[in-house]
Image (cartoon, rainbow, N blue to C red; front, side, top):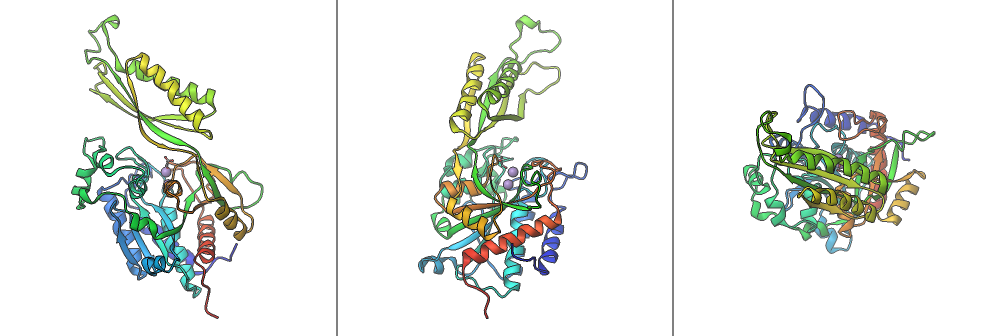
Length: 415
Ligand code: GLV
Ligand code: MN
Ligand code: MN
């Protein structure tokens, strides 16, 4: 690994300090940063400010993803040398951790600073991206920004997704001052990405469990994963006066589905989670007339994940309910040659897979040569305030990213 620069710690910690208060819950310490909200607006302003401070050109694509370029991506593309892009997302899950997403964006700016401090002049332009709505916490579909960008999700579908208040993405975009009509795939933006490298906090304990001190790994692949909406129906009635035999309780079918998901995950060697539920009418003393819940299922094998959903669907069918697919991402290998090149460049660091979804996976499936770097997380916990990486490891991540960008963007320091 290349040695750490002296400047990186100052730059990194100053940016981190600026981001820390945005969307932070004073009690839990977790983050609530959802797409097209006030918090998101503040984060987007922060991104633009960091880019402009460095003299980078900022563009916003048809979806709202922000791009900051060092160099001319179109000139380079015309010359057959498309850019190298790094970055991640700034949004969070409800009560999420500080690192999932922001670590990749802050590290991207810090790595760019490190390259400039060394006098590095890239042969290819370097871009930094902030993908909008990666977690799908508000509208239910993860990686919405990169899905619409690459055409993996249609603009019509995205516009019609609704949040828990019934507000559509189209309405949220309009409220945020953007045109919902502009939403759509943006091949011009995608073409500028010659290679994409996303740095991310590790979301398990692979690196911490190693005997040696290894703060950074390279990604090999993303497990197949998806989200399904489970809906069961009943009849609202009084919780005290309705005899058990007279009830049509939507919660019973839903509860059976949750248990079925756990059993199916065990028997098919997958994982399954129901982490979000909406109950109508939602009164303690009212029998539920409708329950909607979201099933998240993942595993190493696509057929096994599909088998989990089939088992759950069978149970929901028995109760007269419905299971609808919200999103699906098949098995996603990252470019193996690129992963090998990066692992070798960084001193033979481990190459590991992940069960988490990322915009990097969407780009890889769209045919963009893509890689990921993971920074050690000693808690192994993610999507929670307990998510963590030490400052030292974060800076090792910046060094690793700077080294990878140096390699991929070519050029070199003037002699
Ligand atoms: C994104 O973080 C996901 O894996 O759900
Ligand atoms: Mn996440
Ligand atoms: Mn993430």
